[in-house]
Length: 278
Image (tube, rainbow, N blue to C red; front, side, top):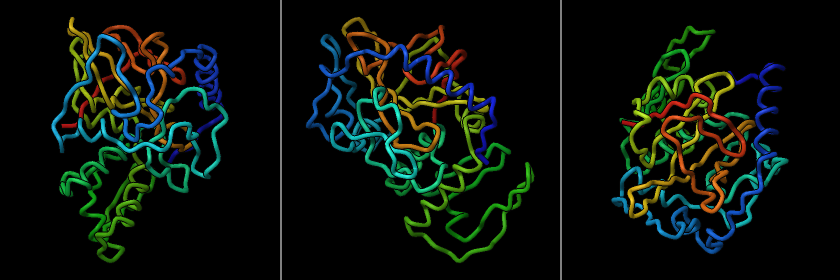
């Protein structure tokens, strides 16, 4: 369950205030306000070319995620705009849900699950709880539900079969409740930070609280240097959004280091782990 104690809340607020104070990067010159997808909305800096991806691939899906109109606010699970609207450049056209569940790791899980659902790869839709137990969409669709008592989890047949999208969303809410950055970091494939990151890779700080962001686009210049776009959810549960970087002149693109800490305007990854869906 996602419950934050006083010390965790203080830590989260401190990090948020610290990097909000660093805000001020102007990303407006790299935005096409009429664009309706990530690739259409965010332009590449001079000297860079956006990566071409194969239609139907995970990478293509992320590049072509639908966006709400330019200027849309990040809202929480109650539909209220969050207090700080300065750190994003685009908001995904994806619901937040009505409970405080779809937070940071959950946003990445949501994107991956929606991609697989759209591709009808139903047998691949399965995610790990923090307890280490796996929960598959096809089991949920058959009426199987987790009975969670602490770290003890049993799966029982308690509902009727239902393959609808509405039931799929209920499945995801269960995953969001019992998964997090720790389980996400553990179940994905480790990526060497010395190489180049790919669209779809996840930057994760597995902790409580932890954080996770996902690479939704990348571009390369003639020297082979890559820059990246990052998207995230956050706490409390809120719109998935493309974040600004601190890299002046190319924001919202990120020049991601291969050894040093990684940060954006709302979180600091002191010892980031890079993970990849297999």
